[in-house]
Length: 248
Image 1: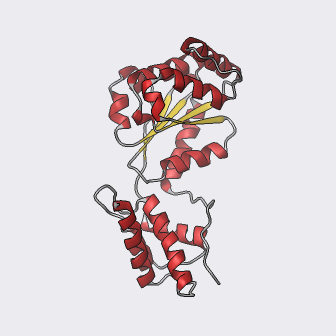
Image 2: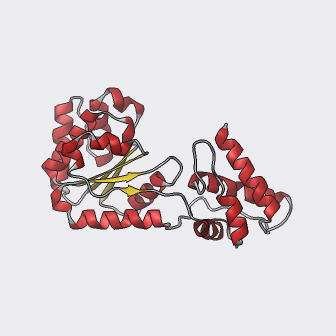
Image 3: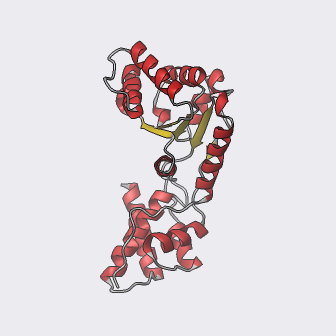
């Protein structure tokens, strides 16, 4: 039987559980109008986790930053309005800002999730601070390692921030669970150890993105050999292919 890899399977690693716990804390403290932070290196599953949380919680709004925001706070506010479902989006910053605040006043339980914030400027943080201060709706910021020093430079933002959730690499046990849930194969600890070795110049062992890619190669190589077992040879070839792709 040919192996297939699920495109939708989601496993709740410790990183995911930490995000859920932080969201629970934010909900309990929702009247404070505070910031949450999800931070870590590239490829550890931050965005995937936040999108999963958003898809399972109707009181959240997910916004992903774009390059145009860096030079235009207006485009940031206009995209914010669109994600809130505001019709007839204004063309002036002041009007956009007021429309956002008015909408959140009417929807006070909203949690705002903003991804790739570390590419933005301090003025964007100031706008977010004003929004959460005026509406008491919390804003969760997602980014890579430089997000923390970026926020720490703005004391008025940092003092209103929950303890950050720092994403860590997958554990070998996570690799075993992911292989079983996403591919439907039971792999040994030795095979998991091979697939776990994703270290490159820019990534550590257990990089979620590269482990996932290695499992995709496992499916291809196993099917080419007409086997439903991930052997050490297949695992070794797969992780080499995944890392080689990451280096290019």
